[in-house]
Image (cartoon, rainbow, N blue to C red; front, top):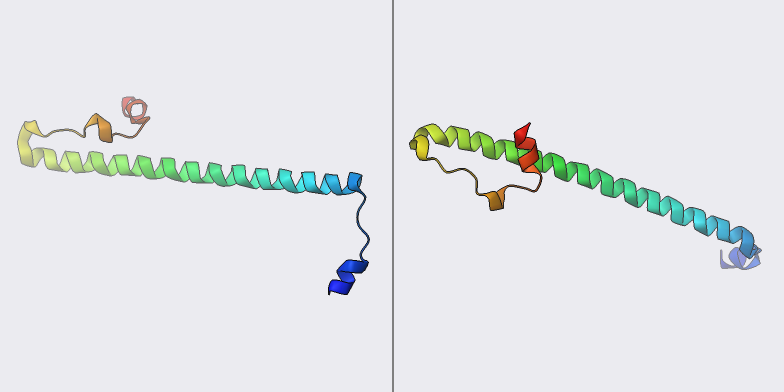
Amino acid sequence: MLALLADAPALPLDEAGRYVAGAYVVFVVLLVVYVAIMASKLARIERELREVANYAERQAAPERGSEAPSIPDSLVPHGAEEASDV
């Protein structure tokens, strides 16, 4: 196997540079797609968690009467204010 690699001719630098640049472009595109998928999953999980917290508040409110406290602002995820206004 090593003999085969040793006998293989090297690519000229101008041609090899294109392959290296192409590999970097593919890597960066895959990285951006991965980050976008993770961001969408995080947003979905935050939205579902907010729904569960609202449901728990509604269920607990009749038991405690009108003095049921809401979720403190420090626990509300960033961007939840805009979503609750809709």
